[in-house]
Every structure is written in C-alpha cells, then in structure tokens.
Image (cartoon, rainbow over all chains, first blue to last red):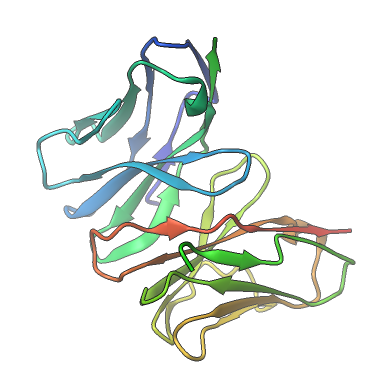
Length: 115
Length: 114
C-alpha cells in the first residue's frame, strides 16, 4: 500500500517562532509528487507547498519550506515566523506521476499558534 | 467562477434516502476529482474524471455511490440508500489536467445521515 504517515496528531508554536511538521511516505514509484495542504475550519484544502520527487532542491514558498529526504522517504514542513493565521490542520499528501490527482493523504496534524 | 464551487454545503439525510452532491469546477479545468473525508481523518480518493470520461473509480466504497460528468464540466456525486457510515465531508477538486498543475479544492459538502 502507498501510505502517508504523519506521526504528530497535534503541534503548537509561539507566534514568530519556527515549527516543523513531520511526514513519511511509502511508494514504489520513481516519479511522484509530494504536497502539504492546509485545512482551516472551513474545510477547504489550500495548497501550501509542492515538491517534485525528481528535484533534489527543497521547495520553498515564503515562510514555508520542506526538508525532502528521498532515500528516507521523509518530507517535513518547516514554518518560519509563525503567524496566528497559520493555525489549521495540515495534511501531507503524495501523488504518483501517472495518477497526478489521485492524492493519498496522511492523518493530519493540528497546528495551534499561541500569541 | 473563481474557484471550485460545491452545493449543497450542508445536507442532512435520513438513512435510506438518496442524495446528490454537485461540483462546479474552475472554468476550463479538464480534470475533476471527488474525495471523502470522515471526521478526524484525511481525505480519501473516490473517483477521477478527465473531461466527461470517468478514468478511475477505484475509490468508490460501494455500488451505492455513483458519479457523473456528462458534459465535461459540472459533476454530480450520487449516493443511493444512504447509511450512517456515509456521513462525511465530500470534497471536489479540479485541475488544468497535466501533471504538475495545481489541484484546487472546493469547500466541500457536509453530509450527515441520521
């Protein structure tokens, strides 16, 4: 089975500090994509960052960056300078290269940001 | 519209009723996906359309679930004879089609079966 595992059900961080959310995955494919999605209470999934497996360079989007360790099948998300608006459920997800929109999601990590 | 639109946002159905959930994707998006998200869980894939063709329905949990996209734009997910375990948020997503394109999600339809 192609699984995605998030081992931290909940995390908390002080405003302006840095937090890292963990994700590991399993795949037999050489071509795949990894994602972090944010889901606020409205339930709309918002793409935070995306990583193509063939790229060695870690993806960054402003305050969000990933640590992609392909051999270890690890894909963690680092949020720098945390803001109150970052509080949400975060999901790690994987998609195969030939089934791009068929995402496999982890169980999610609830992030709380303290003022 | 500017984003993926789903209706109804909230639906309460009595066990045994049929329900229909609508998804209006972003204009021009050829790929459309349905996901089911139970409380406290991550979304799970149900089915995928490319234009009007249903290319993958491997995630549909039973033959009570049926999806269509007859004209390659709006899609409907139909659940027949609803059961309590069908209670979930049903998320629709669309993308321009090719690998690498961003997948945009709607806000979901919250179904409660009582």
